[in-house]
Image 1 (cartoon, rainbow, N blue to C red):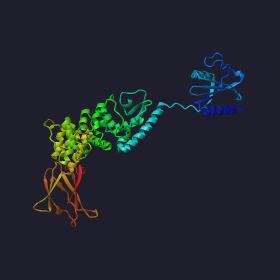
Image 2: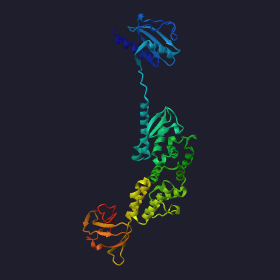
Image 3: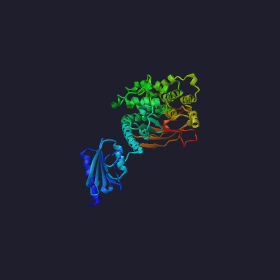
Image 4: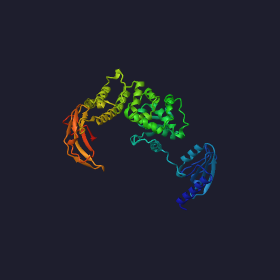
Amino acid sequence: MVRRDVKKILMHFLRKEVHEKTADWGELRRVKSQVILKRGLPNIPNLMILTDEGLSFLGIVKWKKELRLYLFNSEGRMLHGQSYYNNLEKVYKDLKSKSKKITRYPPLKKPITRAQRESQLDKQFKKMWLHLAKIFQIPQKITKNRPLIKESSTKSNSIFGIRVTEGFIYIPSKSHKLETIFTFFSLFFFLPKNIHQNKIIGEAVAFNLLKSIKIFQTEIAETKWEFYTFFKQVSRWQKKDPIKLLKALNRISEYYNATWKTEDFLELVESEFDIIEYTTRRKISDLFFDLFSKTSNIDFLVLSTFLGLPFGIEYSIPVVNSENELISVFKALRHWQISKVLDYLNQKQNLISNGILKAIKEALNLQYGCVLEINIDTNDNKTVLLKNKSDLPIIFTSAVQISPNGREFPIKFQEVVLKPSLVTSFDIKTINITGKLPVRVEYVILRTPNSIIKPIFKGAIIF
């Protein structure tokens, strides 16, 4: 019998033993060329086997509380069998030192490395992240910047023992609340950056959103968590639709993108204005002015004035704030002194927060659209009086006639210059109109009379 067949037979025997006795594992080992066991060993007393007696193989089968040893000669014949019930690790260690492993059943799995564990955790988090992003209708510009998962050997005092730093979430080893953790931190990072940068606010709002999900409604905030007290105040938002609430917070942060102070955010939570209803384009200025009246944060006053301007909403500006640079820019824009606004932006655009800059530019563009005041001359209904309310030149550049089916026909047209802050008479008869079709006259607003190639705004009016 060839030696290869002997090994196969012996391993078949061991596998059968493992299966029939529901053992943990079985192992076949070749003995070394020496006395492997002799009388007097503390772990294996009263046993003496020498290699010259024909011992070639050891078969070991391990249960939780028993280690069974089988001894075989070179032909695969069993020489002896014995079980051990005490000091099993020491017995196995002695056997290992005097033999060489051939094979094991089932094979030993390589221990998973820390990097592999972190990769598995990160994949689970990514799956939860994308699932929640779909449910909460989170835009891609937010979801593409996902934090990564790392494993930590220690627990912090923060929520769930988690530590968050530099774009990584450190989860304690063998954490038993992975689904809750992944959901909570997805919601935490779905919040606008200027909210979750204040850890107390971010965690309180995220925990509030967590509890809006049915399977997490029984989660209880622990008193040791830093955000516990603030969460009690934020919990008044629990009845709000979480998707609409997230959208409202993102809408506010488009304009107020500074990191929130805890006391200022509390005023937002306790505001008499419904945060969801009052983040529409028409009402958001009221919300910001309400926040200013309670916090004296000048940014809220600036935002309320610029956002309210296109709707003709005027707020009372305290005397102490009237000389503020941005309030002065607002006053200039309100009085159509657009050149002053443009000069300010050219000089200090990089010094203004992105949110306030967005509000100024929106107000500026809407003012451009309202820069012309049009009236019919009472003495001649073919003459239109055009008032350029701004301090910039406006030029009528071209005209087209529009047919009922939407087709457009260019009309010969001579440019008309509307000087700053003046009324200009425009004779409609100068337009070569066919029939009674409407005419669209296009115009540009210029920074200077000579900047026709690069207008700062293009618009049109219909006659």
